[in-house]
Image 1 (tube, rainbow, N blue to C red):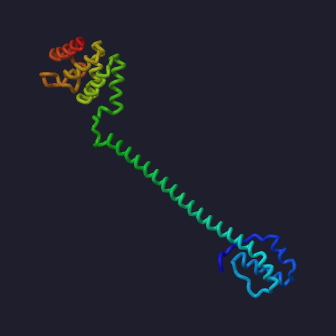
Image 2 (image 1 turned 30 degrees about the vertical axis):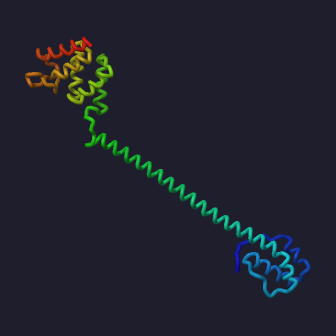
Image 3 (image 1 turned 90 degrees about the horizontal axis):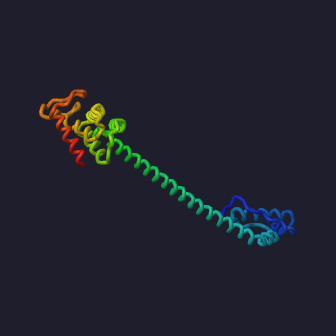
Length: 227
């Protein structure tokens, strides 16, 4: 048995080839034709007339079988190609998913460092405290240059946002909405958390400045005017 098929096309010419056969011969011919077309079984024990009719259609059956066999091979090849394509597509999707997952993990790690123990940024740089300081500066009418902004950040890091905020309030009360005045108050210890010069104590918000502190503030204001 050669190439096996589940079906084949039966043409009118196959019947025409058996037109001169008897009923018995036609039966032999048709059985031989069907077995050869489906399973490539050579006809055996059939009459010479039935074999003659069969040999007439054999070339057509052979051509049809070759086409069917080629189609099956092509289909298998196409199926393999499709399988490879699907496998590659699946692999690509998996790689993309892995890449995305890796990016998310990196983001989480960076976020964790920004919020956890590995954060090198001081606590005053949190959104709330930093925004409060600059909002108060703007509301008080303190003009800030780029250099002043950097100076304010450094001052917040060293003395804390509360000290800077209280200094801004003191500047407003003294009707001196200038960054140099705010800075002088903070660095001279004129607010809670700042040292009060030689006394070594702390000044609460609302207390009057000592002469030494006032001199420091006046000196910084004078330096600011000379710029």
